[in-house]
Structure formats: C-alpha cells, structure tokens
Amino acid sequence: MKTTKITLKWLTFIIFINSYGQVSSDVTIYKSSALSLINQNSKIEVLADSFIVAEGPLWDSKKNRLLFSDVRQNKIFTWDEINGVVEYIKPSGSTGYAPSSPEVMRGSNGLAFNLNNKIIVCQVDDRRLSYVENSNSNNPKFYTLVDNYEGDRFNSPNDLSITKNGDIYFTDPPYGFIVNGKNVEKKYREIEFNGVYKLSFDGEIMLVSSSMSLPNGIAVSNDEKYIYVNNAGSEDPKIMRFNSKTFKGEVFFDGKELSSKYKGSFDGLKVHSSGNIFTTGPNGILIVSPNGNLLATINYGKAITNCNFDEDEEYLYVTGFDDVSRIKLK
Image (cartoon, rainbow, N blue to C red):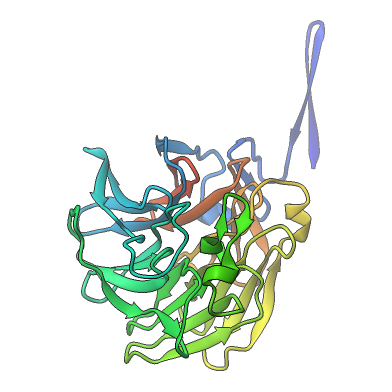
C-alpha cells in the first residue's frame, strides 16, 4: 500500500492506492491474475428489475439472448438487447405434478441446455428434473427425467450442471418446504437429507453426497474431474469440491470470514474457460482460482442468486432476487 499526498492551497487530499491501482467501487482486485478476467473499472449494469426471485441464468447462443427463471412467478423469461424482457414459458415448475404446499407457488430454478438444445429444468414444486422445448409457450409440455431417489420423491431440485456427454449433476435442498417462514416438510418430505446427485446419460441416478446442510449451486470443472457445490446459508458458508470418480469431498473455499462481514450467501456458481470459479457469495460475486484463492469480488452489496456467461464470455450475467444485471469481462 502506498500513500500519495496532494496539496491544493488550503485542502490536503490523502489518496490510498493499492498495488494494482484499483479505484472502482464495483470491483475489488485481490490478486493481479484477476486482471486477465475483469477490468478493475468494470461497472454493474442493471438490465431489468421488478422480479421476485430471479434465478437460473442461461445464455441461448443460437438466439443471442438470456433465459432465466422467476421462481415465485412460476415463469421463465428471456432478455435480449432488442426486445428487453419477454415472458417465455409459464408455468415453469409448479404444474401440480407432485405434492407441494399450495400456500406459496414455486416454479423453475436452475436451467441448462441438453445435447439436443432442450431446456433442462429444476422444478421446485414439481420436485423433479424435466426437459421442455426451447420455445414460447403458455401451455408447455414437460418430460420427466428423474423425480425420485430409491423410490422417494426429491425435496426441491435447485440447480444443475451438465457434462460433455450429457450426465447431469444437481442439488436437492429443502427450500420448497419453507412457506412464509414456516417449515412444512413433515407433510411432504420423503428424503431426510439434502442431497447432491448424478443422473447419468443412461438414466442411472447416483448419490454424490448426503452430508451438506444446504447444497445449492453446482458446476463441473472444465476437465470434469471435480464437482463444485455451494453450501448456502450463514451457518456453514463454503464451497465443497467432490471428485467426480470417487465422490470424495473436501472444503474448497471457506466463506465464514466473508460471511461475517457482508450480506449474501453462496448460491449459484459457474466455471470460466480459464478454470476460475465465479460464484455468488457474501457481498455479490467472488472470483476464486482453481486453487481456492480469492482473486477478486464484484461488489453488489446485497444477496444475489446466480450467474452465467454468454457464449464468448464477454459478459457475466447475474440474477438477483429482484433484478437481472451484467458486468463486462475481459
């Protein structure tokens, strides 16, 4: 840290400049390697607002647009430069397929494209993974991929990540059982733990982990050797890393210190082509190296839900609870 002293007649300015010259309020640089990913002066650009729980950002490269869920509105929306926000698919995840509380409707959460460009949907109230055509519809047809583990219905599938050969990793926390601050799981719950699962392309369902308290965002490493899983909430904020062959897990990033200082928790995350991880977390977005070192933060100052890149990684798109934004990358 160096101090620059500037004296102008009666006023003395003391300017603190860190070793990277970082002056932007939206981006904080901790390691110089982050400057290959994001400019220190990049600014958050809000694209749309007035949502309830925006989630599941997914870039559609064929139509140059963003898809995303609003969990509480039970809808999938699109956004593009020309048309702005357009209502796209409804209902999106609460169709009466499975027993769920009628007090609060919860639709789709995480979204991803399969190998045939269908949209794979984590459906909270329907308590399943399904797929749907990538087309505008007020009466969509969902096709179930998996809705149970060993005969018991899932809790509320939350987020997913797909490998190059079509295997799907997904998380199953209990958020669908929390209604207006009350827990209604005794009436609906069939699986006692909050699981992380692998659905193989051939249809086999495997349990990756049953030990996480609130598994949430999930992403596969570029070499597919590891699965990164966020643990949400304030009690045990962290990123876990699981071996994709043995399912052995270890703490990859401990977020307790950051969580004690800032609002927000570990929710969605994505892996950049460089191998670095962009994850929601305390204060906004954290950029974490493959070695688990914090490289930079994008400072939203509030809780946000998920993030994703466009095809060329020109922008990082971010869903908050009430808005959708983006920030330019390098």
